[in-house]
Amino acid sequence: MATPADVVAGPGRQAAKSEATRDKVIRAVIALIRETGFASATSTEIAKRAGVTWGAVQHHFGGKEEILEAVLERSHRAFQQTLANSVFTKGTPEARVAKYVDAAWEHYRGDEYMAAMEILLAMRGHAGATQQWSVGHSRAEHLALGRRIFHDSTASKQRLLEAIYLVHCMLTGILIETVLEGAGFNARVYTRHLKKQVLDVLY
Image (cartoon, rainbow, N blue to C red; front, side):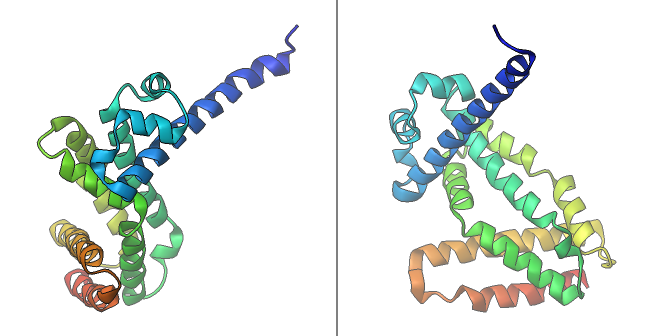
């Protein structure tokens, strides 16, 4: 006979198991895309890499597009959570800009963002995934984060948004050059220039 503790623990264990399965599937997709490209992330390969059946994958996500949306969301949330740390609100404007750009660059060069970029490129023109990405990347959310970090900047909302897009566009370009040129490309030179540009825009 089940005890009250068993009844309480049961749903909790099931939820944890479900979350663990979702995590395995998402990590499998990221690994497949990073290793051999977007085309390799087929339903068969995703299930195989995750160690579950495709039926189980569908149970937790619904279909492949929902999995891809989950990868995009994970990348975005990881970035937001990193920059939500109070350490980014402390120090001189120069120090905060440097920490912001460095943290963004670390995220951009990570597996999650690289996979997200491949998904966005492959899914362009398909409203579902790109729409979900746009919702997750709302301007209001980015502006609120930027305003919190650069709390002493008198820059207008438009200027702050320009600074955010400047970081995004520059780092995406730097990332592409890093992939194409490999170790011979010195990204630090360009992230250093980027920090100066962001500082000029905000202060």
